[in-house]
Length: 160
Length: 121
Image 1 (spheres, helix red, strand yellow):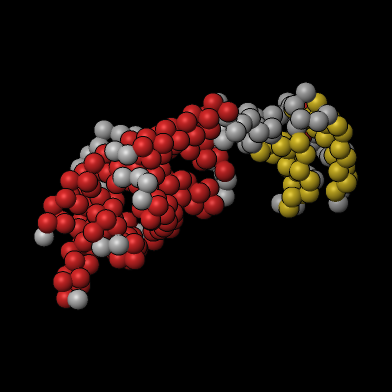
Image 2: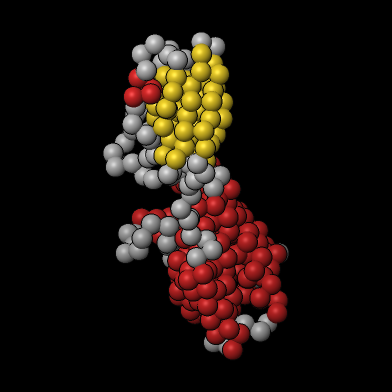
């Protein structure tokens, strides 16, 4: 039990930290496209601690990093992206037909889709949806990278 | 990498390509609209895509607005200065015709972008 609590704490802290690290490292990418390093932690949790734990860590991460770094409006974007992508990732994880790379790629795509849907609701116009194809491709690319990183992390964490 | 991974990646890329090339999500050229304000309140919203003639009865008289070839023009009014009638037809975003004596304003919303950088409102 106490081991699990400790893991929760470490993973939540890491996930929050990843968001911060990513924010301070300049990325050679157009605005709106980011690697989503904290998703490494979420995927890692999914594979080491199960669906429920990973979901809580994902949600906790959104709230805390919104409070610490970003602010209230961006929380809605993050929340939509996180829940939608998590739902898809959990589903694929349960199906067991896809490896961590595929799970993460799907998560990346649906994270962007969730954010765009919220953006079109908050901005009151569906014009932003034209960015959808671009963000889907970037979601796949970043998702695959995250998945590969996650794969190596899972191997190490499972040894502990 | 499993087979499922390839399927997911391919599905996402194909989906993106389909969305991109089908253009269903593209913003599209939305036609402009002429919004008529009387006393600061919206009286009527008129599409610029359909030709037509509109008469507005205001407290002190009337104004006649004509929409033709995607442009809105005030062709007649019984106001004293006729500034609105002499105004050129409007069609670009944020252009407006004002009939000050009748407190009537016609403004373009949407439609062709204006060449100016910023309109102070």
